[in-house]
Amino acid sequence: MASTIKDVAKMAGVSISTVSKFINGGNVLEENRQQIEYAIETLNYQVNTFARGMKTRKTMSVGVLIPSLADYYGVSILSYIDQELYAAGYSTIICDYSPTNPTGASDKINFLINKQIDGIIMQPINVSQEDIDRAAKANVPIVFVDIEKPDVACDSVTIDNEDIAYRITKHLIDNGHARIGFIGGQEGFNTTDDRVKGYKAALRDRKLPVDESLIHLESVSEESGYLAMTRFMKRPNPPTAVFASGNDLTAGSVMYMNEKHVRIPEDISFVGFENQVIAHVYNPTLTIGIQPIRKVGQTAVKMLLERMRGEYDGEPRRIRLKAVIDFGASVKKII
Image (cartoon, rainbow, N blue to C red):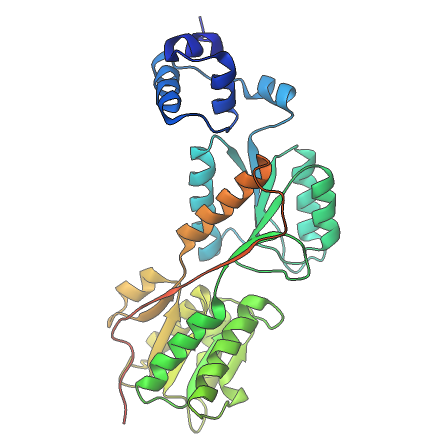
C-alpha cells in the first residue's frame, strides 16, 4: 500500500501541515526539513502532483523558452535551469521558438499558460509588454535570461556585456594591437549593442580610431563568423587581432583559419567567446570570454521561485553578472 502524507508526518514527528508546506516549496525549520526528507525517502512517498494541483492550483511545472535548442548557450542554460528547478521540486516543459517569427514567442507563452504552468524562464526575442501582462493575469511570472528588455517590466538575469567586451578589447590593446576586428550578432539586441559599446569604449579610451569597417554584425552563426574572417583577411590591411563575441561566431572564425592555414597567434591574434571546448582543444589554447552560465541559471530560478511563492512582488529586478576572461596563448604581443 502506498505511503500517505500522514505516514510521512508521523515518521518525521511533525504535523501534516508542515509536510504539506515543505512539499509545496514553503520554508520549514532545518531540523524539520531533514526529518521530512528522511521520511519521504524511507517510505518512498510519491507526491500526487495532479491532486496537489487541483487543491493548490499549482502544477509544480515551469516553462523554459529558448529560441534555439541547438545553440550552445541555450543547451547549457537549459541544463542548469532544469537542475535547479528539479531540486526545488518542479518539472520543466521545454519549448523553442523562431526568433524571426513576430508571434513565435507570444504563441509559445500562450501554449504554456494553457498548460497551467506556474512560471516561465525565457530568452526574450519579439516579446511585448502585452505578453507579460497576459501571463501576469494568469498569475504566471516570467524571468528573462541572456537578453534584457528595458521596455518590458520583467525580472532579468544577464551578464555585463559592455564590461567583458571592454576588458577583452583592452587586453588586445595592451598587447600592442590597434587594428582589432570585432564580430558580433545582429544590431538591435542589447547583448550585441552592449558588446559593441564596450569594444568602442576601450579603443576610444586609448585614443585609437574606431574603424567601422572592422565591425562585422550579422546573425550569431558559424557562417557569420566564417564570413567575417573572410572579409577581414581579404582586406589590403587586415586587422592584427580579432574578437569573436559569440560561441558560434568563434567556431566559424576558427573554421576559416584552420581551412585557410591562418596561424594563431603568429598570423593573427584571436579572442573567442563562450566556447570552452574549442578554447582548450585548439592548439594553442585560445583566450576566451566566459559567461557564468550556471550562475545565470541559478539566479533566474531563484528569482522565479520568489515570484511564484509570493516572497517578492516588487519592481522588476535587473541583475547583471560579471563574465571572466580565460587567458590562453592566442594573443601575440606586438611592438
